[in-house]
Length: 310
Ligand code: NAP
Image (cartoon, rainbow, N blue to C red; front, side, top):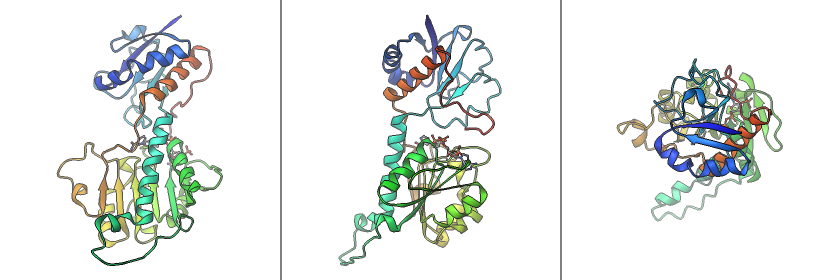
């Protein structure tokens, strides 16, 4: 049996996947026809990244699943025409990339590297940073990416608190949840990493009231989504010193407009949504093994909860 796969994404992504995807399917023993122009009524699976050529999923009457190339699915999860199961990307490459970004930027602030990179101007200032075990780091979101980053930070000795929607137990991490949990998590957040999805419940997680709970001079790292932070509240908190620095990888508008204040703010570091990227080789393996599961009557992995929005 041959499955028909529509690859619906930007042209550059097809270039990246056109060899990796057939190879991964072949390795799983799946015979497949893959096309960027498969007719809807012949399409068994859609490998998808948001693009203007496919926004109406209604004609895909025999499609068994839409397999997202991205981990964040906020631009598709609310699409009323999408009645087929939606799977998000859970890829080892994404996880490793995000962990490296988070650890690198936590270390920058933990060690106070900027002082030495910008230079001490001849001052023999031997101020030493605390050990990691004496630094409290909070990770908001303990899913695939937040969980991996939290564990990596804990393995370096950091005192890690994490926060999620449902209760969790992760060895070496203080896990909190719910509204009360957020308050406690933020009280510990000398460095706060945001790895929540973009949903109606997570918008403005950091706003005037919640920023005020954090220890004075806290650092924010946001590789999650721009909407997680109220931008004006962040700017005000940077102004008063309540927050000493924010390193932002995700923004409400992307690309971040050239004239945006974040680009020139002395206490904001902008990284242009490069914290983690789906890697074609490992992502193709994830897609192929999910298609195999579906073809063999096993439940799909990484299904999006349409009510929760992630
Ligand atoms: P995930 O596995 O779905 O994990 C999401 C985490 O957020 C879970 O722990 C979840 O709690 C928690 N959460 C969701 N809603 C919440 C709420 N209302 N209150 C408290 N906790 C809540 O997602 P992921 O794969 O780790 O990815 C996280 C986000 O990273 C993505 O959604 C995307 O926005 C972003 N991302 C960014 C980049 C980049 O390059 N910057 C790359 C990939 C992804 P439960 O565990 O209880 O469900």
